[in-house]
Image (cartoon, rainbow, N blue to C red; front, side, top):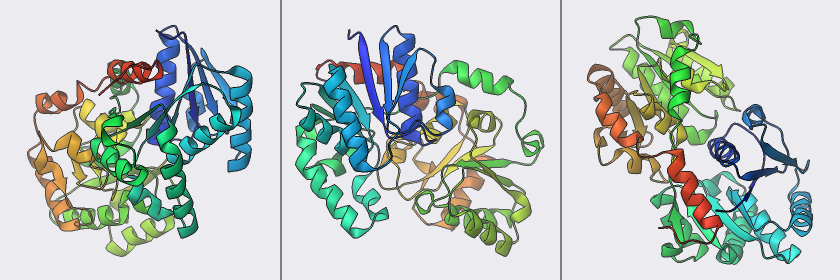
Length: 370
């Protein structure tokens, strides 16, 4: 087993990828491996959960050229045996920096979302630059991982990397101790202590997350039954979403709670978790809800993550993207007839941090992993 692990992230923002890799760094450090977490800038709420035995290396840079130079110098100085990095732009930075540093560091990159869909959020010139970069550089990685088979298939088409060379490593569920602690914690919101069903959704308030459809679905649901909706997350769409709720007359039953670190505290007390995105790789919050024993409803979106999680055991919980009527109907069905705890556990239990961490470590050490 390697005695040192290097992980490279853009920041410590509260995104799903960053959360997974901070947890991964903590896991390796607690297992006795010397672990370094390198970031372009050590800003963001996840800094508070980086374990004290993880060496945090802050490059203090934001611009692409500056971050690439900083990483290049780091590789030249430290010459790590292997480096694990995640997210498309960060992966391209790492590949470029290693080439410039002329070091033998083994580089394992991780793609976290459906790239062809994700590219659409960028201007055309940036889309082209990233496509060209992925096509030119991804083949030079020593190992490539994707967070779902759908993401791997899509990446193979865009990058030209043989699909058989892309390993799928699913995100891990929370540790049992985290769920136990959440259940024992103080109630974070008064609605969660009342008899009215509470729907919880979470994620950045951006178009990808489909909150317009969710508010429309909630409006339809409220016409036939009493319920409330708590949305955890912040972002640029907040004013528009608040206005949409007010126009629909459901503003008193929707709480825009903002970003919270203690999201499990909400999930363990909720009635159903809803994911309304138009694309997701392998959504952490969906796994967290299942691990907490909470019924779920999800869009069957690009990236295929929700289908890979739910399609075999709970296909009835998947709905078409953008279909507010079907989303409302399925939420109502899950509130009325939730699946058994055993059915939820059967999906969540195999997806442990032990398993995911072991597979990443095997790739860092050069072992093959399917």
